[in-house]
Structure formats: structure tokens, C-alpha cells
Image (tube, rainbow, N blue to C red; front, side, top):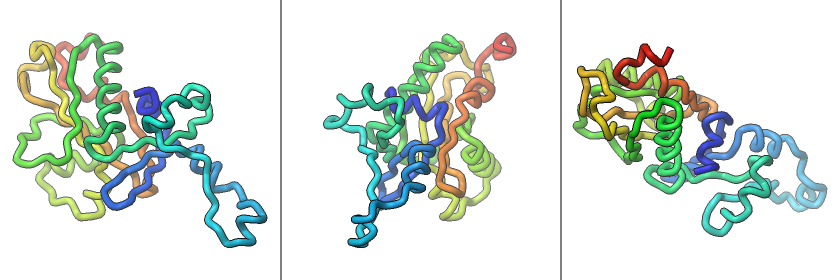
Amino acid sequence: MLRAAEMFFRPQKLAFQESAVTAIDEETESQFSRQPPSPLVALLGLPATAEVDMLDDNTAGTYWERSDRFDTALDLTAAGRGSVALGEIVARWLSHLLAIDVVVEPLTELRNAPLSWYVGLDSEATRIGDAIWNGEDLDDATRARLIGLYRLTFRNPADMIEKVRGEPVYLLAATAADQVLRLKPQNLVTGLPIRHAEALH
């Protein structure tokens, strides 16, 4: 969850391999990509390797000693541990900031669900959500950019505006054309159907 929380304030470069999605800190990835390979690596024609480890059970114990280097990757594959952790971070952040109790569940697809309310967690996701809301068909390239889908449920429906009270809210996350994910957690503050939201301003 700590690694997932970094995504709230640090853009992530995403790597795609088959159905897997991996997030690497954009600044860290950029630094590694600018480093020239060692003479031996260049001589042998080997690919340059970056010291970025996937955060998993084997590397979790090293997180604190390297957290300020932002050099651990996070698996964001749909419904995987990283995706679940990001949903939990959203729920905790909303509890702390807005004093609302929600459950945020990652989804692998959205079929025949009434999209009564949605929040784009970044600019690209907002654009995609608007297109879906307006009944537009998404091309394959646009669909591929949608890398996160969550169902947010209010534990106390009375916290919601009456129009959609008791219905789930869908959260969308998507990459820009450069395959960078730039989350905007402030969208949750301005976009959720919270009753008396005007009191927050």
C-alpha cells in the first residue's frame, strides 16, 4: 500500500507485457534510460539493466531502506495485489480527508453495469469516462489506455446525494499517449457524489 500511495504524487511509467501491467516511477525510469551502458555491456552488446525490483514478498523487506529512491516497480495488473493496494489507498485517503467510509474494489471488466456516476482518476481517464457516458464507441487504442477500473461503494448511502444514493461509483485510471499514469487524487474530492459537498469548499 505504501508503494501504491506513491502514485498519488509521483507519475508512473507503465510497461505492458501480454496481460501484465507494471508501474515504474517515471523520474527513476527516466534516470535509468539516460545512463550510458557500461563499456562491458556495450562491448558485448547486452541490454542495459536498471536496478528496479518488482515489489513482492521477496523484496518487500527492502522497501523502507530504498523508499526515497523510488526504485521499486509495482504490479498493476487488473485485480492483482498492486491494483488492490491502490483501491485500499483511495479508501483510506477518503476516510482521512473527507471522513467518509467507502469500499473500493478493483474490477477486471465492466459489462451491463449502469454507469450512474464515475470519476476519472486522471485527465485521460476523465476523457474516456466522458466518451463512455455519451455512448461513444472506444477504439482499441483508447481501450488499451484504460488500465484501472474500480467500484467504489459508500458504506453509509446517506453520505451520497439523493440522485444516486445506494448506487456504486466507478473509478477509472488511464495512461496518456506516452504511457505515463498521472493520478489526480483531487478529482475524488471534486467528483464524488457526496452529500453537502459544498461544505468541503
